[in-house]
Image (tube, rainbow, N blue to C red; front, side, top):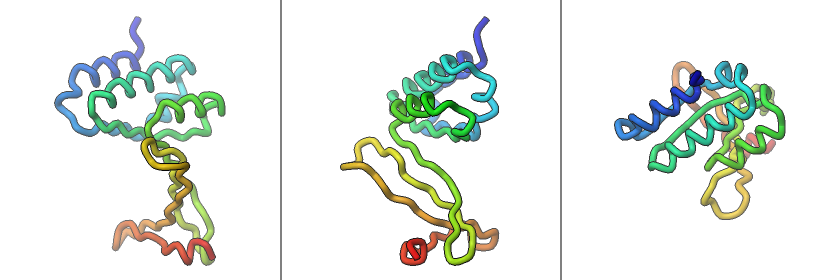
Length: 132
């Protein structure tokens, strides 16, 4: 019997010409119920779709995976960003860190601190304040 992940990859490979961007948010509940080999095969399938010139974006809570599997998935990905929180100037802000960016010269070590304001949208926290 074919798994749900196999069927999803089949669909994406077959109909990917109709899309420029494929976003899956969030894959966490799906991944939590998969064996490691199934999840790895799913990401290999997503990689095949990406190699056809498609932008594939997935979100995943990495704390549900073993460190070994996270390392393998990061190696397979073109880019890997990690979202977290930090205390800056007495307030909690979100921080997105660039862990991996294929094609970028050297090792990326940049982070961007930001807040989400319902009235104004995303507000980037100045780096001078972020480093204070």
